[in-house]
Length: 111
Length: 115
Image 1 (spheres, each protein chain N blue to C red):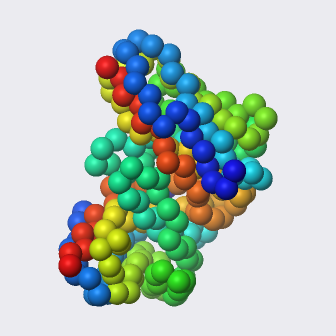
Image 2: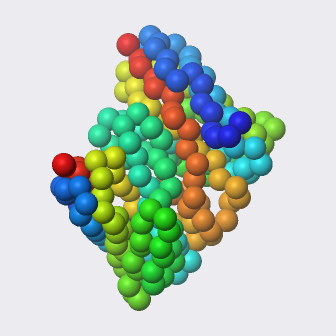
């Protein structure tokens, strides 16, 4: 299973764009890249998923370079309510659907 | 229900006791996952089901842990002879199908405290 590496924490201010990068050097050909958000005392919540290039939805964008060995979650104009832990997962490619969470990135947004 | 439901939300037990945690997935979701999360850590994979069968139980820490999903819907995680180290939040998630998507829908978790 591909291992992921993310920064432990990041700080930002309201209104800024935040980019969180995840490394996954051993990603398999069929693996997808998925990001989750988790608030205290809640289960993780799906944010976005992609396979290659760029994916955008109403809350975030996901940038994946051609070699797919990393990915960047981009949160536009963050607010205080975006303070949470963000997890990058790689998998779901069919060989196994055992999806492994890393330690995540704690994003702290300040006023 | 609209989302994944887990009961109880909180469970306090004594060391050595038996505990059952229940997960009611989103209707129609064939895949069901159990994770365990300790404070400050990411969710740790325990087991996942496709339908009634355990497709991968490699994350169960030892034989005190067991999970069932007899009718392919509700699942129960069973922990025998609980230890203080079992204290954690146990998360359940379901997904529509066991295919190449990582979109899991999580419940709020069951917080287990072993005294």
